[in-house]
Every structure is written in C-alpha cells, then in structure tokens.
Image (cartoon, rainbow, N blue to C red; front, side):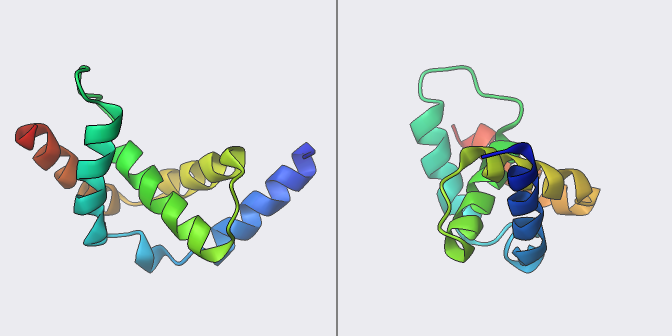
Length: 105
C-alpha cells in the first residue's frame, strides 16, 4: 500500500467512524479493559498508557464493524488522529477506567 493510499483509507475511516460509539467510553469498555489488562500485562509492570491501549481496542472494534479491515497501520493512524483530536473530557473517560483497572489489579 502506497503512502497516498494509506492516507486516503485512513481519512476515509476517520470520517466514517461515529464518535458517539467511542466517546465517552462505552459500557463494553470496562469489560474489554479486564480482557486487555489480563491478556497483555500479566506479570509485568502496569503501563502508564493503559487508557490509550483500551481506547485503541475500542476503536479497532468500531473499525472492524465498519470496514472489516485488518491493516494495523491504518488502525493506528485512525486511532492516533481521533485521540489527538479528542477533548480532555473525552480522554478522561478512558483514564477513569484505566485508574479503576490499576486499583483492581
């Protein structure tokens, strides 16, 4: 995939994603947080950016619902663009779940 195709598909997905399904963190996010935390971080030091990992997981679910794509470069670019454009209040919804997970585990 060339750079132009990558950018075009990324911007197409950014425009098609419904932010309502991502922000604030949907109820499934807490369930996914337990799965993500247990799968990726068992026995290791807890990451500082668990909120971002959880957010990326929710965005990948939304992208798969829309497009059925598995190109991880596109998923990463889409999630980075949306996260950087999100307000502090929107990001805080994922940070609250992250804090809850850090207290829980």
